[in-house]
Image (cartoon, rainbow, N blue to C red):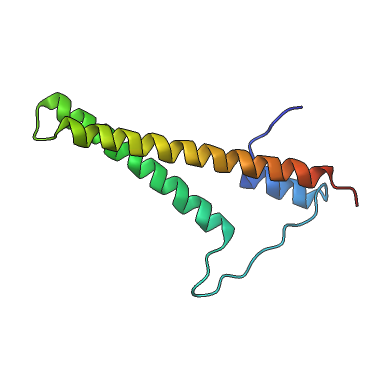
Length: 104
């Protein structure tokens, strides 16, 4: 089975060709975030922690005033956030697979 990246072009082409049903769009209230925004914010936080860890590593290598303890904590934090993001991705993929198995 081949796994494809889903992007807006592929998705919109499939909708126009009537190969898949049109997705249900959620209306955004002022205080509520839709699912896509949660995912985007989560990915942005993981990226931010990766960048912070890399910057602290560079600072340590350059000899700037950064303790090894601070660098190691930053690295561990970015590693854990990446692992969490991968687990969420895996759970979403499993849920998608389960929905595909449902017979209508």
